[in-house]
Image (tube, rainbow, N blue to C red; front, side):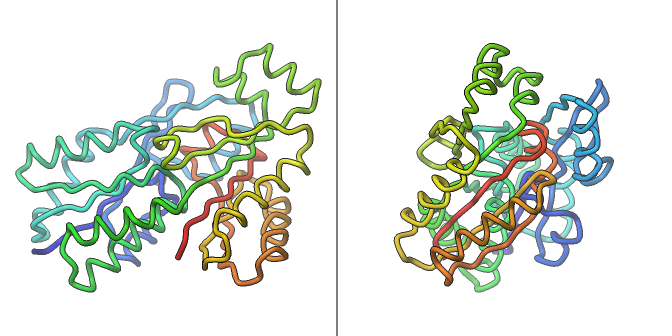
Length: 281
């Protein structure tokens, strides 16, 4: 059986990355001032950041249905017998179901891996799945192997722009004002325990305490096992490098990459946000 691996731009992968790793990629939508843009096609992450600097409050949506249909039709035309789908967490997007429905309509089996995540961790799962496919494993074996890894994974998010969260309706004006006055820093999480939805994990009084809490939590979670970590940020590289340094001080064996938070997630977190993603190797 010839298996295609399909993901979306929530994974922080672009067209060049997809070609490099042999993946199929669907562009999610960014909607700003009533205009819809295809992520990575009509708008870049840097362009999205510029809009955020102007106090825009973009929204996001699943890929255009016809784009999903065309991509699946192309997969069939390329001679594949089945699709292994690793979309953005179903807790954040309906892409998960849309791919399965389109696959059924077009007569090609779709097996979905629920990764309960987004950004680089989602991309890591897609690349890992393709690696297993290339080793000749069955689609059921690949699903089981990746889902076992997913159980060890998670993301902690440290948003800094509470006003953006307020503008986007994700934080009430009163809560934003109180958090600003008391210097409260919320720590958010998304992982299998939250069913792939963003939830408040902890609240601390300073940014320094938020970073220390996140670093200590991840080190404890990995409990000495080899780990892959992504420190991702929305236009605050210096802070991301600081977090990377703190993690390596705790465990020099960690494999850590830094990257930008993808456009479709930055639309919700705002600028100056740090997220730390982790998974056992």
